[in-house]
Image (cartoon, rainbow, N blue to C red):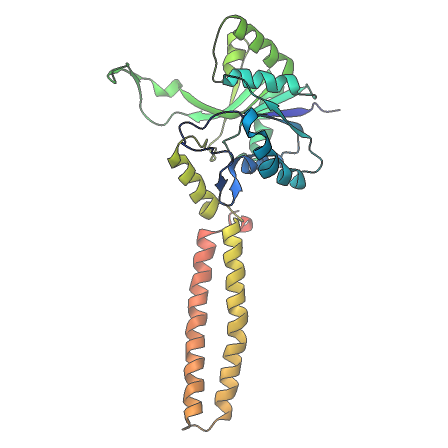
Length: 307
């Protein structure tokens, strides 16, 4: 039997930098947290989900997020546990609630662009060394700055990577690492840091795809724009395709009727002129519809059009 993978989703934050409860706020028609969970369920490796939440959000999450999610993923167990004061407290509470204890994935609730391929890549690296994380090499110039905002030095970015989630571990390794780090009084904002603390290796899996964490309002706008225009098969693209299909359905008989009526009327009659004008207008509408279809394909590509 292959090792199982459990997911701990950290969703107990207060969204202070965003300025509103981002996880429950609709993003392109669905709560942000539901976007993340829906992406997560596409992984074939997942055995269960533990959602670590703020106690005061339990009822809202149950109705707005978990009810529709369970309709999507009827065979995937998911349950909520209350979080703690710090992120590491929430992660440890989530770990304690895990039932399948081979490998565990820690995922930020506010990263809604997870893919099955990303999970599979990080999981393969975790099978190899015990702990793995996705990330990418730093591309901006990095400065070390003091409390007054003055630059102290320029950091060599060639050896600096920005890491994200998912982060995947052998279950017993992460539990042991956190126990040691907490006993030492450390406060950690990254789970791989606990593994580093106990001297175990962590492998970074390069990932250049979009894996945005929605932290500030600008992140929210970027995510909405990508979901609306950038993703194959977006709901908006599907809706526009349907509307264009309906327009063409109405134009086709209009073109035919105006042509037939025009042919049956005397050449110099008023009715003939009206029929010809209707035919010309219908042909112009058909040309506009073709241009609109072309634009829709560019803005909202289907999955097969992006391959």
